[in-house]
Image (cartoon, rainbow, N blue to C red; front, side, top):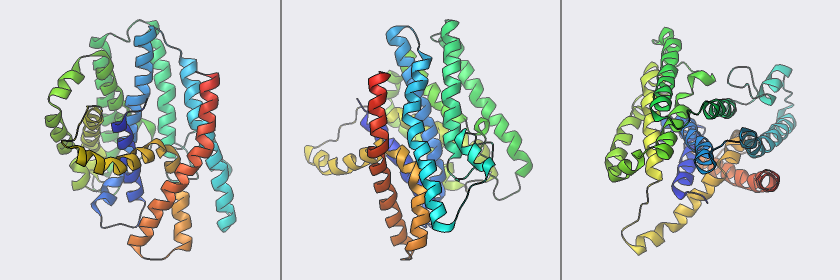
Length: 345
């Protein structure tokens, strides 16, 4: 069963990424779009930790081997086929041949630390490191019988979020007077995932979500306030690299919880009129991983063959990226997920 609100948030995340890599330089979503990756991080933290928390609550045990195998079937086939296919396409396009260090960085998911081929795959390394870390830490917590000890787990997660902020502050401070400074290292971009895990823990092990539902509109307002720095300060600035990124991730966390609440529109006519939009957004959300993989290759193709101006080129870029992503998701991801569900149910 899929949760519509979470699929819509996934679509929002990938659309933000597409805005960031489009030619719509004067659009506010272009400046905010780089945070689409961090929205993905929060969602991944919530959803993937939720798989572990749900299994523990249901069975009172954990199977980390099964967890990693199922993640592998979801992630690896689509990525490695993308990697091979995109290298061939780029070689045909301009004779591109990757260096061995770049290729190894991609193959072993070290793009957030080592050199790599594509500019966007660093985020996949952050996600992969997260899968391995949460599998190990959950196994340790299970063996020590501490997974459901709220007074231990919640302070530990909050401390890790603060630690991630402090490490980012330490790295960013020497560059505080520079207009742009970027970083991709997993330990510097992990607070979004940690916030996702924290809200997942609160959702599964405490009564916080019932309180949240009661005051959800207040929390939605707080979420909007927390996300405001993303529109006020440019990406790569000292403010956004430190406190701004933390507050936006907290806003994303509250927005994720809000997407789980049961919202009903006031009239049937309004529900009917919005149904096609909701369907399109959930469709994009379901296939967002494949869209994310291929969108830079689609942009390169667009830049080579189409010169219709920023607005039309960006529209075509959106259409091409979403279409290619959905088609390849159906062709590549779906068969491997069927194999996964058959052999690793």
